[in-house]
Image (tube, rainbow, N blue to C red; front, side):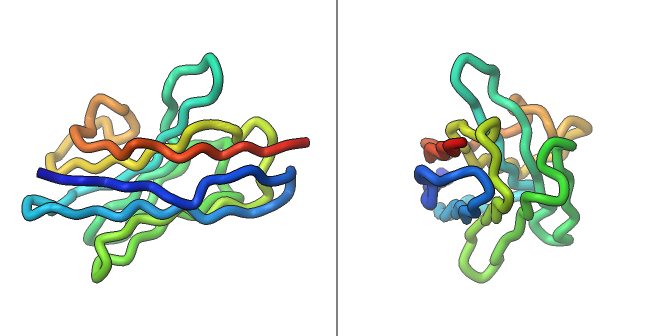
Length: 125
């Protein structure tokens, strides 16, 4: 069983920064990819960023490129999302996700069997 617990969300002003963390645990935790998704009010869950757990390769949605940075600490089994220059449209519940399998669709939420409970990020203008 894999457990993912997010933290670090909060209420900030436009232009501010936040750092989200996702602590993973479980004897079967051995991810291939981990990712961040978000779901804004009245919106579908959308892909934000992903990282290859061993190689560190990253992919971002265009709307966060240059502002967000995904990283991981393999010694701590922790995933991070550094969010800079936040905008009101970044307001959402942010979820971390993990998969141990292989897929051609790592930006799709359906690829990930393991999810955290989410952390709220609110950006005021």
